[in-house]
Image (cartoon, rainbow, N blue to C red):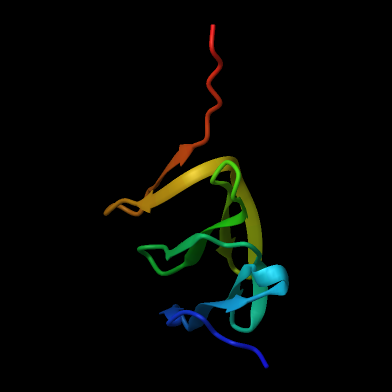
Amino acid sequence: KEVVISRPSIYSGNVAYFKYGENNSTDLYVNKEKIGTNIINYEISKDQSSCIFMSDYKDSTHEAVLNIYKKGKVKKIDERVISLTQLENGNILYKKYKTYCSP
């Protein structure tokens, strides 16, 4: 039995939601199509044309891959991302993981 674990978001006739996946991962679906695994965050774009999400989350570093789902396709934006925020003008602001070394 499949279990939806979030309230669906509706945008431009699309429905985005989380479901439990293999190994207790949180998977993101849009219109019954799995678009990402191990998701920690997603947002619908201000203009309702796309879904921006962080996938492949790593517990050890708290980092993920930033992606955009638009017109039925997923495109990777960046890696080693630790947070994402959508600004009022629709731009995406995100922070990357950085490793610090001692001198």
